[in-house]
Amino acid sequence: MIKVLKTGMLTTVQDIGRVGYRNIGVPLSGSMDSISAGIANGLLNNHKNDAVLEITMLGPKLAFLKAAKIAISGAELSAKINNTSIINNKVYFLKKGDVLSFGAAIKGIRCYLAVEGGFQTEKILKSRSFYAGITSQEKLNENDTIPFNSQLENTNNFKGLLKNKVHFFETNELEVYKGPEYDLFTPNEKKLLISNKFTVSKDSNRMGYRLEETVIEHTKSIITSPVIPGTVQLTPEGKLIILMKDAQTTGGYPRVLQLSEKSIAILAQKNAKDKISFKKMVSI
Image 1: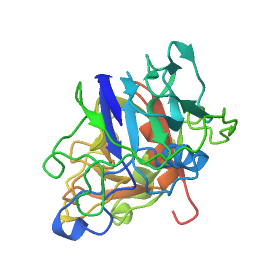
Image 2: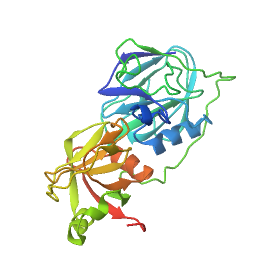
Image 3: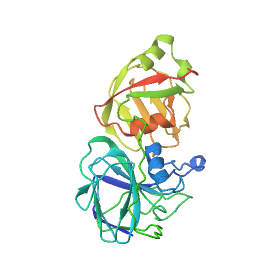
Image 4: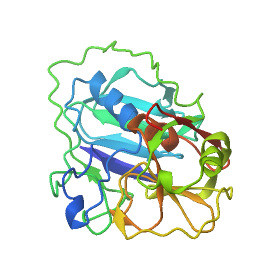
């Protein structure tokens, strides 16, 4: 069991999401940066769908009410165990009574905390991912307790360490495929999508990332159609919206591009005013 002493900016429980329910209007949800979440789980030999904590920008302070083996990955958020700094992508043992805390973001904005055995919060529609209106809460609150299943046989120091070769924080290029309405636009308009650099808007969250620049004003409309995380929509005003893990299941703006899962993870680590560009794939 973990007790939340301080909440941080936004801390939620996430797994791979509610796969298979979009036909009834249920968003996928799940870890925004699924690759970093997978690394944290992998270090502990957890199942890929074991629930982790997704910690955004300013992290929480957590008291461990029993011993646990943990790993953190993703953003660097000044993590400490009992005021001793720790690093990402390494396995640590925490004793009963230890306190894990996070500070301000150094690199990236979303960090993932995994515990051996996974967090055991309520499961609804085969997922523990927080989502308002589906789970009983949408974020962790002060004094919440979070159960987990870790069954440690000893208290030896663990030395697992993984060098993260996924350069999420160094790249600004997002791999994209053409969306269903990509070919509604002229070659020059398509070139604007691929050749421009864009700025992440402050109006960005788990539902979607908006980009500041106006790229192609248009009057093209479509019948409301399915969308998925990573779908890039083009509004009539010429603005781009990139749908993320908590996005709706349908939309009425032209779907001009589609991000790969790796690109969704990269974008999930970008903050307001960061620059991104699209890297076209072979199929475009």
